[in-house]
Image (cartoon, rainbow, N blue to C red; front, side, top):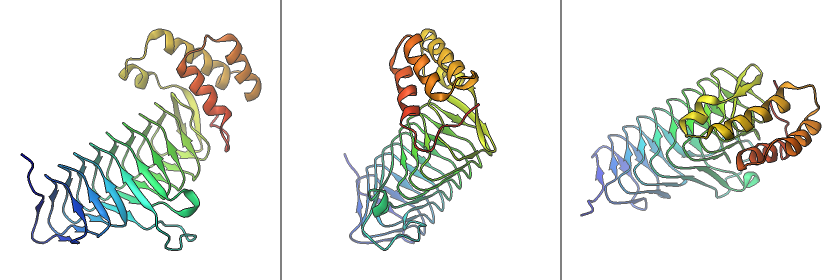
Length: 262
């Protein structure tokens, strides 16, 4: 049987906020009128949930997180925008996630099964996929795309409009100003591609055949003397196709900021 929300007496919850059955609200939390929280989500002490924010089921939001505050963007003029967060996320202490802006489509979106570690920041209009890890004090500027299963290390700074590809690993303390290719390990100041994220591919059970194709593609794309356009053509013509290689090639072709190089 579903249970009513459990709200600590010291919490301030606007009567218009929508809290699903099983939601737990900790001491001194503040929840605004346009917030919707899914079943069994736990909101820790001193959290602030505001703006037009939707949070899914079975999330854990830890002490002091500020979710749905207005963008840190001087162009923001108070227009209606939103934040959408999926299911089963762990949002650790003092994480901040901002609403979207009109210039970015009006929405900031974070998927499901993500871990945002303490003090991480996700700015306006970011699009974060599923099973993403953003480590302590990493900062995502506005309009960033983080694809599924990517890992962003601690103290990383990512420039606005950058994309981080699926299963990419960005090492701690890196400065990322260009796109991080899918399946890559990327680290440095500025960030550079060091090779394939072999450990990440192993964790998801990727076959040895697919890993070998990606290894071959990476050698051509990032460790040869070919220009990127010629390298892309060479990979497309000489390495057996598979969805992972096709995604890697498409990601690089669609880059507007250029990709991190070796």
